Length: 237
Image (tube, rainbow, N blue to C red):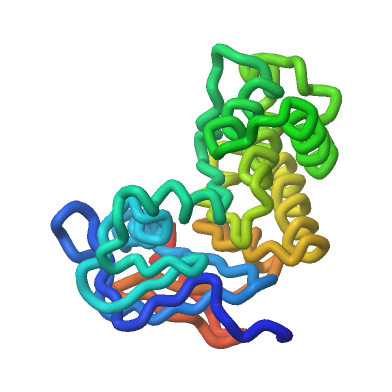
């Protein structure tokens, strides 16, 4: 690995859900080009880790740094700048249903400081090409299938050339064939662009077919599993 500086780093960090601690003493490093899965049953803190990474949940004990920003005591004004360095993909797509695909993407670019209309159009075309969706630019989200909507959500996550994509159950609402297409896309982005991926999933088939590092959340801890170690998915449903 050429770059040994982690994009995401936690040391002895307690992860909160509201005021309750759901994970104690998290140690986690994510490096450029990593593909990291976070697995665990409902309530074990998977999504709380994601929310801490994007500074939605506060970090009050231990240390955390994401894309060069210290999470401990991060100022509200710095949070939008932190999030511009990341792409976030949700299970339920979170597209704006009252505007076209192109306008969804344009909205994000303008909200993050882009002003040149020509450059905005070029960037939108580039990310739609990356996810195989150029023909859908003028469609409304409700005119697209679930898999197509998720591809648009991934395109949106790529707009500002993020160092890392944070994906919270991105295949959770998709059938197996469509989910496989999304995983192929994320894997290609990871390999070709060197974009790190942190993905929450409970689907064993996914992380067996598309190998990566696996962090398992259980018993108020989250730790990396050794290569080849059996993960009991009775605990990660």
